[in-house]
Length: 174
Ligand SMILES: Nc1ccn([C@@H]2O[C@H](COP(=O)(O)O)[C@@H](O)[C@H]2O)c(=O)n1
Ligand SMILES: C[C@@]1(CO)OP(=O)(O)OP(=O)(O)OC[C@H]1O
Image (cartoon, rainbow, N blue to C red; front, side, top):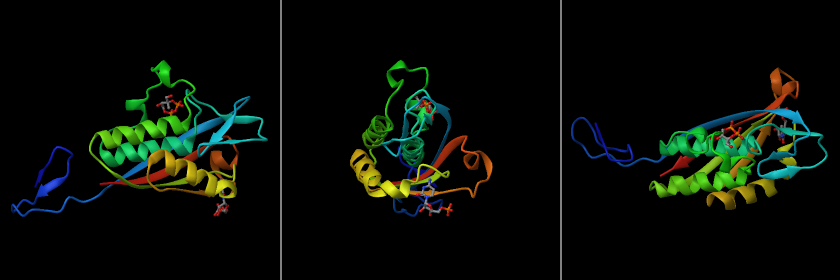
């Protein structure tokens, strides 16, 4: 089997031309809650919490998982490879800013983005309550459909203890 520059298989071992398939990616991100931080999740500010997610940036796990999934799909590494914590320009950056830049990098590498799907893992915030708002903002940011869903862990583990929040994402590029 041979591949082109983007890693797409172009010929089978028998020399048969193969279609260039879309590529899937997976991304995960987790941050701990910390007192005195603003809570930013799915590109939105969530009012009424005395704590937010702790990180070098705004620590928006939904946006970060989406970035990781896009980079994964394009074979371009991960969040840390592009926006390392050693880079002062990304300190305090919003998830939306990182996600817009991730989409730009993926397109610059020659891919188009099919969609991104993100699942929040934790009891709160209840992303379903603001799903339309979050999806509209993140889709506009990526330039492709982004869906947002949530699931609790039934009180189990660190999300159940409300110590932090995780998001898992998939992305399709072509
Ligand atoms: N952060 C979250 C978590 C859950 N939801 C919504 O609640 C439903 C029930 O969650 P279970 O884990 O108990 O199945 C889930 O299907 C979501 O609709 C949410 O919006 N945000
Ligand atoms: C986003 C970056 C850079 O500001 O920092 P954090 O907000 O801490 O987030 P993380 O998910 O640990 O990814 C590393 C960095 O790329």
